[in-house]
Amino acid sequence: MDISDECMDVLISLPPDFPYDELFELADLLERADVFVPGYLPPPCGTYNPDGFLYSRHVEQSGTVLLPDRNIVSRIVKVARSGVENEHDKLAAAILAYAQCVDMLIEPSISFHELAPHQGNI
Image (cartoon, rainbow, N blue to C red; front, side, top):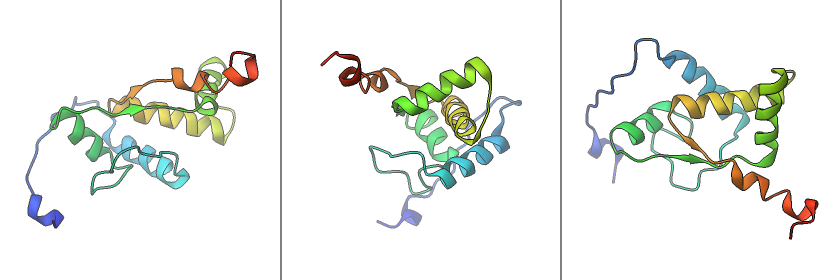
């Protein structure tokens, strides 16, 4: 089926102070770094396009769950403690900000299972 066969107009009302333009800047940064590995078929507009996430959340009433790995979770905690110190920190902060803006659920607990074999909990 061609995408042009499924065209429709949708209006999603966002708060006046919603950082829509900045969200696209974050999307560009994340796409250049290619940080997401979707466990689903991304929408035709692409994996990183905020409109796809907003449409999914507000029109289709479906959510996206972000399962960050331990490196990302550790960097997010580091950024919260001491701020952004390098490009990896900036990327972790961008992931968190993007997820927050498109209303992704964040489930970091799976990342701690990566520690189990190294912490003696088999």
